[in-house]
Image (cartoon, rainbow over all chains, first blue to last red; front, side):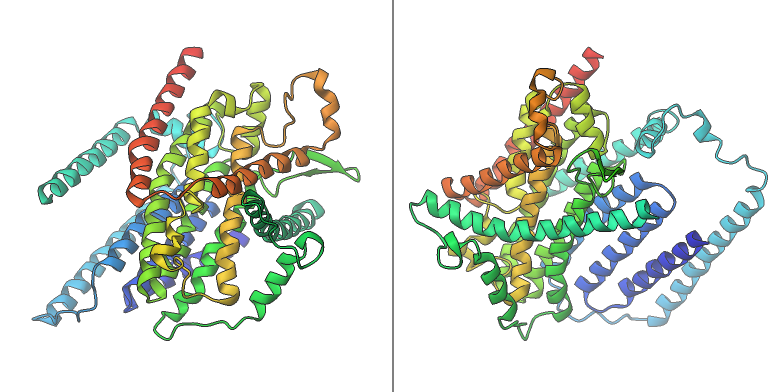
Length: 172
Length: 340
């Protein structure tokens, strides 16, 4: 019961801040609402008992990436008025289309999830992990079952880094 | 009921109040030590040897006029000092001041909480603190504060990399992310990590100086170039909050350094029974003595060293400390595997 109340309160804050991010006119305020959004998402992870993911969420997103966003927003001049769209209705139609697609997808996931949770054995993977503790379990899974996705992700980051350096070098 | 709510609440109250008192007296200590270093007396008027000076300062700051610039972004301008202060205070939630002790026959751990991601919590909360500085500079709508806040945040982000890498070496040694677990690991391995990880210790200390914007890395407050720093437009109690946040951060860095590298609450040579007489000093007092040593060195460094130039600061951070920290991490890993 307490968990449900906490979940819905946090979820309401997440949605509220997400709406503020896209609706506020001042870009710096928008970035700040994004930070608040990330902090409440971290709170949601804590509620799920995933402290490690929660702390990493704050460290990487709220404390790292958004600081860079803030730098860009502060340093790039955004004073000029937004350009008027040639055809404003085109964007509206596109927006509704995208929203419908996301809604359909979420509905499919929810429907599929509720249909299969009854038959699925409860969290089979954790039984095989020989270590206890949140961080240890994440590490164990990352270097056993999910080794290849992990390596691919790190390769992707390396490629992105090299790409950024190459692009910046050309400018110099 | 008592264990779950009353005792943690009392502990939070004690830690918060002790921190705020310690912070105000750090200001006095800094003025005194620098004065002695320069053959002056320092504050002498308020109370004997000026010991009541912080109280006079606090009263002055509270009754001062609080000005918000007309062109400032009011919400962000108000929020920035709070954002700077709060992370510095909530880090104390995981700092272990001592082991579990019996108070009136009741086992009480001398820390507010011990979470198994304690060290990561410290790093992540500290990384949120940078918003206070960036936003203060931006919301003032004034050139010098903006420049200073950009300097400060670039400096913080750069040195955060090196400091976090040294923390990974310590985690490798201890095999735990919990602050209590790291102190216990130092007890079990019979050594303070300052002696097996001297490079990490040094990088952590230098990075700590830079992250708290202290001399010789106090460029964000270089008066000659920036008139006052990111808080130029602040006055009264809001200025005081930035000031206090800086000192609170110094105490945080000292406490974390003590916990990670100097054995936290452990007395010197905790496994040598012949030195058992040292136990007459309680564990939390050892912790405070070691932390105080760091704080004193912070002030000593400020009184001794001239300020770095900005390019020197960046070169030191990126070209010396980060490669050194990575090398230290690799060596630690290799040695750890070979000894296993």
